[in-house]
Amino acid sequence: MATMGRGTSKAAILTKMGLYLAVLALGCTILFPAAAEHYVMEIGSKSNPNAHLFAYDQKFRESTRLQNAPMKMVASKEFTDATRLSTSMALKMEPNLTQMNIEADFIGIGRIDYLVFNPDADFTSGEMKNVRERDVMSRINHMFVGNFSIEEQILVAKGHMCEDGYLPCA
Image 1 (cartoon, one colour):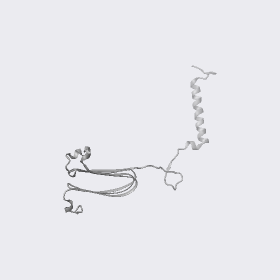
Image 2 (spheres, one colour):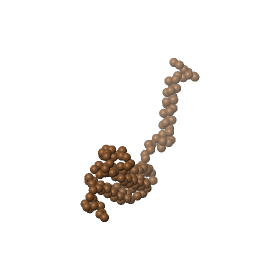
Image 3 (cartoon, helix red, strand yellow):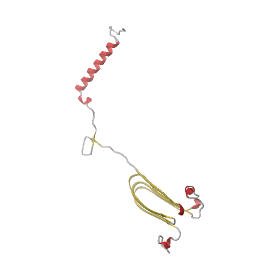
Image 4 (cartoon, helix red, strand yellow):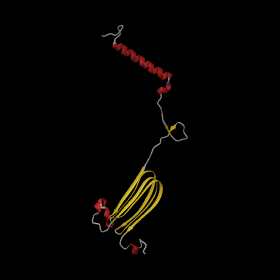
């Protein structure tokens, strides 16, 4: 057997070191009992001084896009990065009429857009995204950043809507 120093083998040194470490760990447990206990985190309310409260950030998002192909019209609403968001929408779409009522109460970013295209423009509903600017009859963009309560009413009609009672007649 190989010996080290004064005739002690490696195996004997390792055995003694293991014994010393075991005694040291036992002594630390007896002298410092808190070191041997597991830490328990209490989750609770503000009234508990030992409780840990967690803060989190939550953002809301909502979007709607509609397309009335017979009227050649596109409308959309989108709310993003909202810390408070409450919305409702009423929608009526017919070949000669699009009516959209939006109510929203939010803190964040809101956007309401609609495009009305020339009814004589020559493109299909699938091409409404890539339309030429000269084919746009009306473009409305509303952007809100901050704390808002809005009531938006959009009414787009064509044909004889005065006689049908949707638009005021002159």
